[in-house]
Image 1: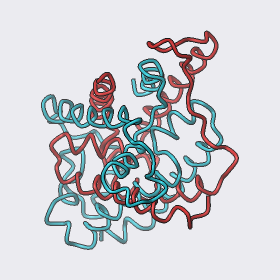
Image 2 (image 1 turned 45 degrees about the vertical axis):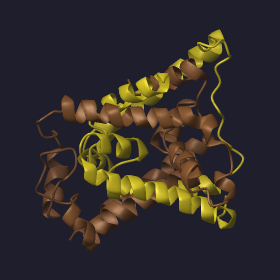
Image 3 (image 1 turned 135 degrees about the vertical axis):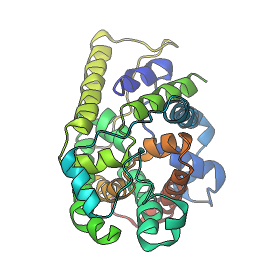
Image 4 (image 1 turned 90 degrees about the vertical axis):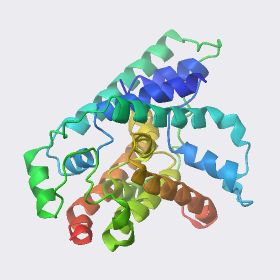
Length: 170
Length: 135
């Protein structure tokens, strides 16, 4: 189903599927600040903004209106490891005991939510794509750049998972 | 407008396939489940097969233009190594890549607008530092 986005976007307007370019367009539309990277006509990329606007609605429909009340059937080993890190709320899509407003001012909450989000945006634009543009579209098109990027995604992700997260959450 | 509908479809599928879940990302990086690999892997296969069919049959889009994917710049490497690595750090922390950040924000988890806004700021700072970063 997700893979269908590639031909779907090609068909409805000859666009290359990717989500993180929307960050760039949003910056260009709001605070371009005279930077070269944001100096282009973002209105030519409006389709990308429509796409992410639709995704917010899709999230609302899938996660709220037709939401699944059951917890995710997580692998026992992951659950056990996360419990050991002090995560006990497995009821939703994200751990409520880590992602909440009062945690925002704690070091772990700040790193996970604010720093994590920042690195996602910065890294995706630095690499020129995220999971949709590189891992799915780029790998499906056998782009060398995308294979390198995805290896990078995993090296970064594994370091956080095995070395940093245990320190940060505890 | 048609992109809005494409987005609604994509957002809905992302929730239902549970790939927007922080827990699923943790599971993926621990190699404890095939779930994420199955979803992303099948998406790549579906994408690759459709690109192959489109190229083979030289299909046109609904406006009659030849369908073509924008190629990545394969002549450089550094930006993919460094950018990919930084993205990976963030992906494992927030448990969400850009798509899920929008989707989760929409699903009523308003706290996820924090990493979403932060990601947009991250993109802006990249724009600021870009001339000084190795590509």
